[in-house]
Length: 576
Ligand SMILES: Nc1ncnc2c1ncn2[C@@H]1O[C@H](COP(=O)(O)OP(=O)(O)OP(=O)(O)O)[C@@H](O)[C@H]1O
Ligand SMILES: [Mg+2]
Image 1 (cartoon, rainbow, N blue to C red):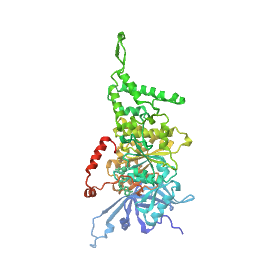
Image 2 (cartoon, rainbow, N blue to C red):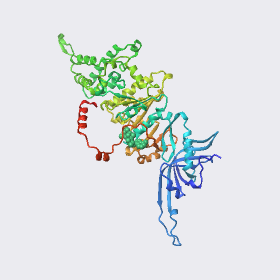
Image 3 (cartoon, rainbow, N blue to C red):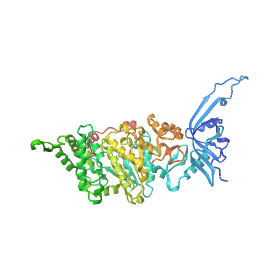
Image 4 (cartoon, protein in one colour):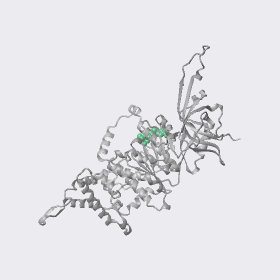
């Protein structure tokens, strides 16, 4: 005879439900011995209203209090156990039905009928737990399975996520610094790389994912936004993001000082020239008709500066036909100087001074194809290294790239579209909360928020990774359907996660500060049971190893030559 999935007997009986408050229950423990086997995150089953139905809950809190020992009439002290009041608070997570219509052994999230007071409650452990976990794994279809680790409470059981659900409607990996986010990203990328045509673009802020892009067993293509030292390299994996890809607002956010009294004149002259120059360069007649000033069409920035200078020094005929200052005379000087400084700065060259080829009309086809294309030879996971992008324009660079990729996807034939995901590591750097965003960050926010709100319909999703959830745009986080949350020590950050959860899951997040490195809670529809998971280590590890200060100080002396080299690199803004 096949064993019942949940065999509930006296041995694993805990006690009885004494209080029910929506999805929270309190159980009074009768079997005090079992308390030694219990910890936060353990699974319990409560007898439901029908014989074939068990309500599954997760232990949130365990309390023990002792009564004063009172001497009985015979002068004996009462047995200590009867004076112990053990209580367990638990969250109801779902319903297990051994029979559900024609199906057997089905687990569903959610509870339709709450348990009665006095319902018996059992610990699910040992063979029961293993069989139950197997059922969970079976609920995800074979080709959608994404194994990320093992359940911490039952290390024999694999934690299986539904890959479709995880990527479909935005997800987020949150956790304090050093909690294991980057490793978790690498593990997920590794699993995705086993698919035939995965399409994930990783925004790598510190160049830490480069080990994934090197060697025989590489799983991703490596790209880098050109730094000052890359400008003369002829390498197709060095990315330029020419200024003409930026729309009017984006480029203005990097050069216009809105507090300047001439800002309206500056922006209006800039826009006029921008439009004229772009229009001249459009090669297709059909595009000309509906083009806007924001259309990504190459133009010459030097030519635009020339035109602005003409305005800035221009004259007009005044009374008695005398030459007088033109309408914009001297009003654009500061704007031009800011623009010229940017064009000359080698750190910004990937944007304002890209190589000649990037200014050709067809360049964009190649550029986007390179980023979105997947083939048997070319890996579908692309890691873009942003480490040398100056921080003041980082948001606009990430935002523009995301917008262009999204727009291309938007305009693609419905039936020919294939989905892709943008994985935004260190998202707090460029997706801040609205109140704290400057002009440049607002542009990035606008673009990413648009993807967060509409991307699902066009097969574009976001995977947001951050160590400071409280500093990340609320709009974006609240659009995420799945959260992989690692250890979070800060109160504010924990509250952000709590507030993103439905009431029934709020209690589960109590364990966030006590999670171990590499341990996570997965919350959302990609997993049926929100429980502690020990994440697998990736084979190719990101270069994010925690430095062993104590050991290092005892072993390695700082090297004078290396310090000099670093100073040289700093001056050159390149690793020479
Ligand atoms: N699943 C894991 N198993 C074992 N050790 C791990 C695991 N994940 C991470 N670690 C350890 O923790 C260290 C830090 O991990 P990781 O770089 O992923 O942190 P992080 O959360 O990305 O930090 P930061 O926010 O600073 O980028 C790793 O170098 C590794 O030693
Ligand atoms: Mg990291």
